[in-house]
Image (cartoon, each protein chain N blue to C red):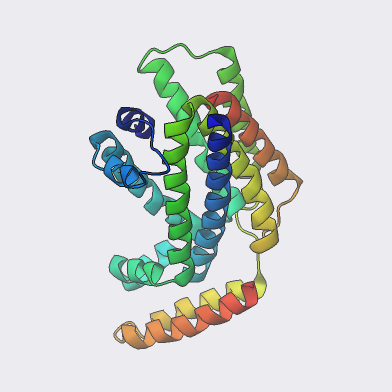
Length: 126
Length: 145
């Protein structure tokens, strides 16, 4: 039963963090080059512009959901299962989601990279 | 740190959700959250420069750093399997680092440039610049979706 809870929480982490990452990436593309904006408008304006972006707010909310799912998962399961499973599944999920929703050109090079990093993280955190 | 803190807090029951809120009061969890905030700010900056599929694998170098710190500072034993993991991550990051960091969306990119130019054209009237930039942004999101 505990195992089912843990895996449910892991899937919740992966789903929420993929949604959050995609929304945040879209928000920052809309905000524009932070370095250039800061030089032009100042740091406060950049922060205001970022925080005022609806995608950013939804993204942060999704990240908060992912974070609390992580706390739940860690209180139910071992960190040696939760951390690698959630992290490596998030890498794969993000590559798929970035291709579909952000229209990023995820070429073979990036698929291989996502796969390698996911495998590496699973080995390292496990 | 978060793991350490949550193990101190103990198992959280679904029937006592307020237990999760109290977890924040644990100093280990609090320090962990502060560091996550610093990570978040730099991560957002990187996302404004490059694709998600570029930034995200690159941030995984943090795992490699963690393992190296564990090995050389804390003198922990790092198993061969973990060295293999380090090699995988490093190789993966090397793979994307060789490619382009940003997918070019000509129309979207143009809009972003334009909003920047508009804001620059009226440095003393930030309200107007912000408004124009906002218009450009809504166009951008229209193209994106």
